[in-house]
Length: 107
Length: 123
Image (cartoon, rainbow over all chains, first blue to last red; front, side, top):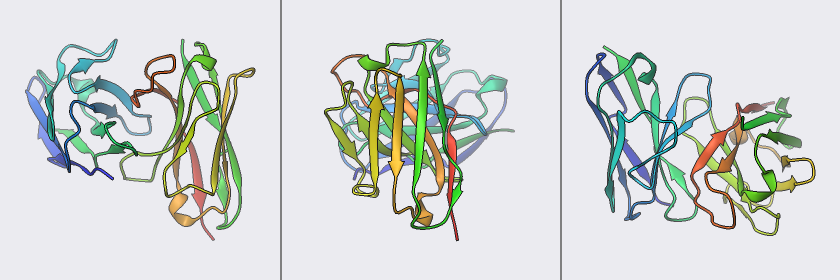
């Protein structure tokens, strides 16, 4: 199975900050990466698919980039509702696999 | 509004069986691939199983193959997961999720998800 490794595992930031989370695949996955946001007690929510495509209804402050093995999720200006855990997921190879998560906390 | 509502989760002993259901509404269920994804406490999500729109293509994660059975009832817009020979490591919140795009194409992007149902396997 392809391993998805996220860094950092947790990050503290302030409102208005720009934050970048990275995800590295154990082998090339082309652009077959998605990003999800999960708040405590809630289901994950799709933010980005195919590495850089913004899912409908997701604010434009979220963006994704990368291809091959290295991917990033960027939040351009943190809002209060953005403090959550973020997961990357690859869909290039069966079975699809998720990263271990990055918890974004308020500084 | 698209809705997915899971039910059936509870505490069971190792070796027992359980059937989860996912009732859907707000979209044409019979047009989509559907998935089960689980998440153990404090861990990342793990994909479990998927089924195509008419139920003729089914896949499982190795960890559940031979023990779990996914099925769908397109007449009643319902997805199911029959879980047999449950183990402690099956303890998790189980989510049903729709594939992002309709039709025969499979993207494996999960959107939306249900609220989840908790399965606890413990003696």
